[in-house]
Amino acid sequence: MIALIQRVTKASVEANAQTVGSIDAGMLVLLGVEKNDGAAQVDKLVKKLGNYRMFNDEHGKMNLNVQQVNGQILLVSQFTLVADTQKGNRPGFSRGASPEHGKAIYQQIIDALTHSNLRFATGEFGADMQVSLVNDGPVTFQFTL
Image (cartoon, rainbow, N blue to C red; front, side):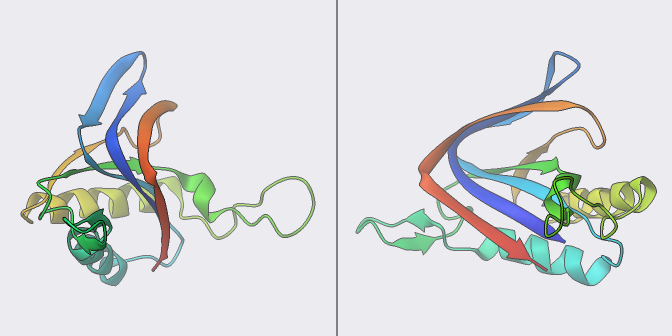
């Protein structure tokens, strides 16, 4: 599982010309699911999202997590994150989960977020989406789980 996390002042995602998810300040999570991902990666990701200190405290240091700043999470599936780009001029997706497995893992993350204290919105799995964001900082991190 690969997650690209961006600290944002706002973010939204559209599918079929409709806004399907939007947040104010918080984090945008672009998520790529791999073949062997399961419950362990889901649990690790959700804990990391809730606890990762990427927001500034009163001294400008990244000491606060998304809950401490009353932020939100926008979760968007993006299978291209798991692409193999080492050879040639075309990405390979052999590491990526099947659409069925990817959707199941994505739903498990949504379920885990629902049972946490984290406020979140989502994109639409498998849809052609347009993502808009204002990256705050810019601050971007990659989690490989």
